[in-house]
Image (cartoon, rainbow, N blue to C red; front, side, top):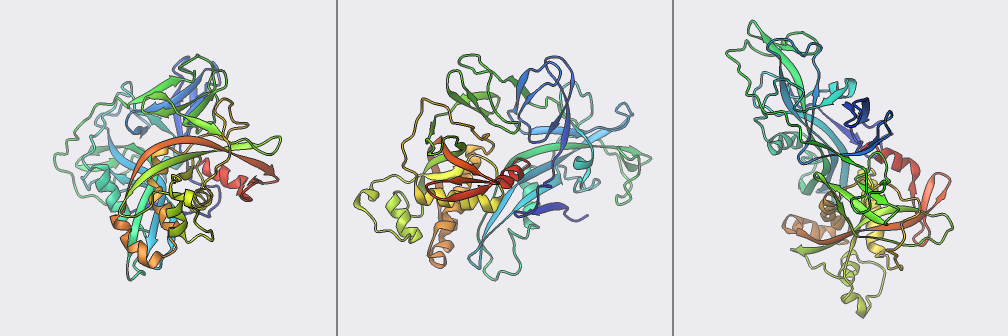
Length: 428
């Protein structure tokens, strides 16, 4: 069976693939249907607010109609979803959304991909109470991703004589999904449909290696660790505000960690604040330390001032999800302009948009952002493979935007972001 994965154009509609997960409230036991992107939710019955996290990757399973069937076992599949970027031989940055599953077992008895099943059926979290026979992954994620990446047009374009100067994948959604199978009379059967897999030869003494089903799922109360007040956020949020003690908390591993933030006041009476990661990095392989270096590299129409030589360079990357092309345009615009407005740290942002894009993913996008800023691409892009980036500091900065019909507009830059593009990003 060949590779089966989905590549969704960055300009495609809002119908990005999403999964539904069946869960139970840890407080009252009531059933809850979550979307795959949900990290902050309230039980519809007891109203308790919770944050969902894991120390590893999330693990789900597709339930067999008869969980108690003798001999049934669950085969693991890696699932990855995120943005692929490629700096191609024609000196263009190409991007798309990659959504793929790949067998996490080296045993070719089973289908290579889950296809559309996770979208059509509800999943459940793997927990110690599941009581099923889960097969231990025998293919590392990196090996599975290499096979997916090798078949991805963005990363290996046959029509480019010089190939790709640099390619990367920016995505946080790596998870394991287990699908049910069983063997009868040396034939492997699909545990959901109850039908044999016609593409497989007769099985000889197949004994699946079972693993523990701890699941690594942790549900945290959505309460401020400092003062105990309720935290505010959106369903997809990985960062939350406490309006009582004015602190911002970032969901990482199995904890809530305090992160520094600042707010740029708006010029309008009712601004919307969008979150950005302000990241300072150290480059190796290219001279890019100050704002003056950026002006020269990007060939900006500005006369380099003496004080710019000592002005530290910061990259401004959205802390909210948007499609890949828009992510680059926003980051490029704010990084070129290096916002220097007065910031406040003692007041919360007005109408803060949820933090949904992790800081480590934002840092991983900086190399391709830098590539888009290079004016002399024919000279500099061949050196991208030798450029290394080391983040040294980061913080959240909230930028003010005003709402005008279906757009959010940054007044001083006259840069607009479509509200629909933010809605699309909620499902990435």
